[in-house]
Image (cartoon, rainbow, N blue to C red):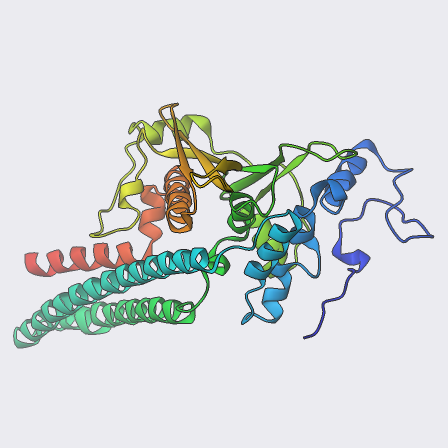
Length: 389
């Protein structure tokens, strides 16, 4: 296996001023206050106080990096086991991984089935409208209505054909996406920030807790150390899923700024049902149950805590607290229930996503730009026009 280079060129990082001749690192002595702050946060993640988060986020040997070079190996699971042993805990039991993998596989299947069935229904609608167009074209030809026949044959039918091709491409994508990940472990399917949080859930990273909230750019993960060994400060960091994705997939350096939060007024209006935003109902939509409402999750916090089992042994439980839109909290505890915990975290993320997308863009303007909805609307409008004529 080719090992990635352990260092990056200076051009890959933001310029903060001159560099030290001895070590090649930025010279902080002549930095402005603002440059000094940016430099501090850009290097904080590589210090011992943020172990192992900084290693995961930026080391060339991070499992999030090595899985890109050798995707067939379960780097994330292996790294979690190493962290657990370092923390004095046993490795994750095989039955726990299998239970989580089974749940993740079922979720992938349900989502792919929904996507394919939705596309198939739209394709059937296309065939019905195509029959209407063809009948209208024959009628126009018999009536010697040349203009009407040309509109149908040169505009409406070709446009409908393009829509059908797009729908077929969507169905193929759903099928390929499912087949590509059919045997993937649950861990590799988690967004990177969520996977880091799961290390705290399992106790592999003890003495830390995490929180996920919304921003205009997507979920934001906040990691906080509850206890620090002597010589280290209690510390933490916040980073968005989008920033982690862009770092690993596009090579962008971390910015480590505070992501823009969702507008409070618009968020409250959406959750309270005062926004008058349109909603398109799709049968068996997996996100339907997560539509914005008073019980929507607007933040989720979790930590791992030791617990004494009935047989006298000690294990760890994951305590999850959901902060709801109506300003109440719901606390849940999970002991050796990886599938249920994965489902709980997934449901909260769906709730956050639906609230976020509703606030950000699930308006008539964005809906009209949606190719599937646009296809339905155009076909319905054109069919009505033909029937009226």
